[in-house]
Image (cartoon, rainbow over all chains, first blue to last red; front, side, top):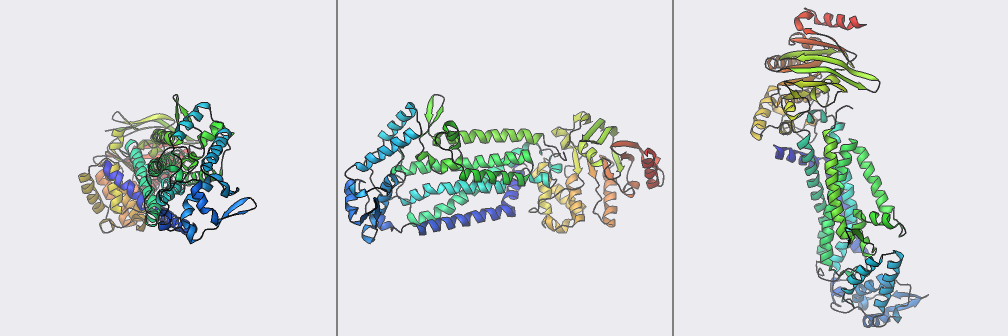
Length: 377
Length: 232
């Protein structure tokens, strides 16, 4: 009979009109976002992007592009025509480090990597890293092979960038879909029936929690597919084994794009679990669906707009561990590490553990609260 | 089987909803009479364990009101409650059966039996949101009986029922009362005239009177009004 309760709890979530509307809306908006992002970018055909496969990104490559470069007020302007279309992906790597506010025609040999090192050192100083952290990054950077070798990687690159939108939508869907898991029955007085039933206190709480997690993970899969499928058809999945620096040149992590995508998928799913667990905890505590939804939407706004500067040491470190910050790829340009039990950990390593711990804590606190729930207080 | 309430009290801010009430309920139908706001609903919630008393205890044959075994023998029909709009009437009963701990086989059997009993056979497959007030009330009565409860507590069960349904309901309760503790609250005295074995009269959170139905005489309404008036 516990399975029956679970199935009916799923029915409540999956058949609720508001949830269906929210999910459909999210999927449509994401597909629209993908289509607009594909059509907005400079149209570099797949064939052209593949022409430079295997080429090192260095002064020689920049030399070939020089005829297309013009210097205007000290800044470089690149005029791309059909002949130079193939250079766009590689120039993206270079300009991600240098920007356009310099004369790129002067870049010779491996100067690009010297500029990159200077930029990294500046950031490390600005972020006031400890000696241990600096050593950690030196070791990581030593494993990054240079010069970078270009290979076609548009598919995984676009997927990696899309996780920020996914994190935003999954939080939104959690707020809409799960805020009523425990609160709704209080609002419509169903609690009176459930709380005086045999399984209405202990088992029902856990089953609702599991059903909530099932819903959010299913929804997470749906919205992820809404992005992955169009990207797959447009860009393919080639480039999973290429270096992360082709997408994030200022990262010092010696990983491949495929590796980072795997990490992001795990973090994304755990973030969904975290959002669901916290939403359901708030649902138990407040017994007010509207209050929970508004509270989470309020958090979402803060999450989107609040940024803490580097001088906020520990607080910034904690703030950057929130799911949307991790999924926003902040870890590629913020080099602060998490010190734990004598070890140093990347945000990507610490975040999943922290999310799991918070989710379990939310489950336990909620259970305690639910058992003490009363009607008509 | 005896349901014992011992000096239970419940206070909301400045209002005492239930004031040191003590009584024992045994098998048979007990009618709980009182005007709106007398504290009947609060008392019933205390007896169901969904509201904790500020003081006093409720127990049944040694079982505390907060235990799973107590909830296992309890059936409760609240005065008003929502339904899941996405569920059909049958879905609702099957869901409640599972929450009440019935096996799938028993749940199917009992659900079909009760759907028949409360006259919802033709509309059992329809969404609850399409039900009339009376149909919802009958569905509520059915859910209270799902686990074949030994203690049946019903808060204003005849509200929303038409005269014909009221008569059917009285017959149903009359039959159930033979083997169970049934507590039925109402402010409509005629609902109890022919089915109650005992009566309790509440006013302002206090138990004004309790005794056998026969002590109320032929005209129960007049008896009730006289008792309510006594306190004034």
